[in-house]
Length: 348
Image 1 (cartoon, helix red, strand yellow):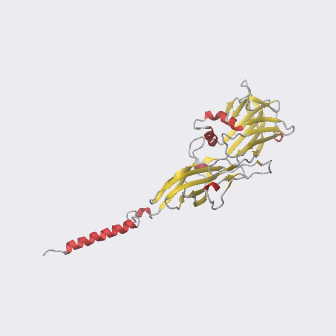
Image 2 (cartoon, one colour):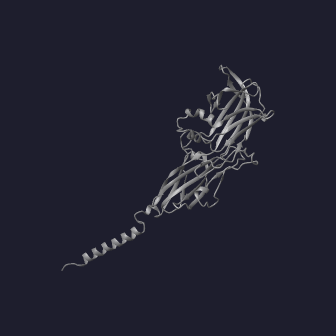
Image 3 (tube, one colour):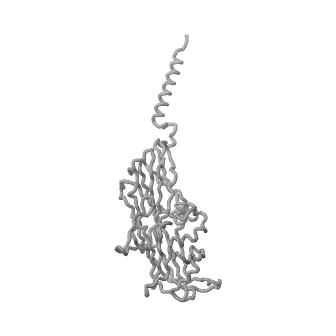
């Protein structure tokens, strides 16, 4: 007699297997991907700071505070966070964000460490819940009253990054989102004024002002508004240096050093640097700073444009040579250590 229970049993087992497979698929393939931990995606947003003169990722060693904002396609804020981090040699930092799969615009304002104990910091607009991405401005608090506004303190290092139309795929597990590239928005400027005849210069007898209109940056990292002010030094001190005269003979130079911190420098936004004598009010040096800084751009092959150079280089130095007290020798200047002959017509 034919055994009909064996085919029946086989049919039941196949049906049961099909049901179990359907249940498993419906539950995000939980059994097949048990090692994932769960079925939800875990999006990890990374950051990178390679737009520097060394063209290497310096995020780990430069950035200590990160504020991240995500907006959906309708312009609504869907995620925000601020994280503190310790400076590290490597860049293994990321922020895990909890959002639905989709396409988002990401903006970040980051900070680094200042050079002094009492810096001023850019203020980020929009409050805790900005209504739109264009509210995320960065504004430098100024001192004084108009028309005599000024910034005379060191500024906490500021960085900006934006990435639009970023896809957060509908999958599961750990998903690394391509890094947001940062641009540094603060610059350190060291000015030295040296007397080639060895005579001393009284630091208190010189005033330094750098004209500017870049106290507010919009969400695209561009200066907005026309609020005029000046940057003034937060440090001034006497210095001594070994220098060579025009014939190459070595000698001792005495002078003064000033340090200024500025906001983002823009290639097509002129800024005049003026150094005056306090006792007479006379002008000792007056130059268009941006044009002078760009005199050495060709020494840095990594810079692809004037603006790229200004964004990559963030620790500028300029040395002016004097003789007979406060008479500027206009035939030479050191910019970032490079000797240059400044233009002699139409620029001063």
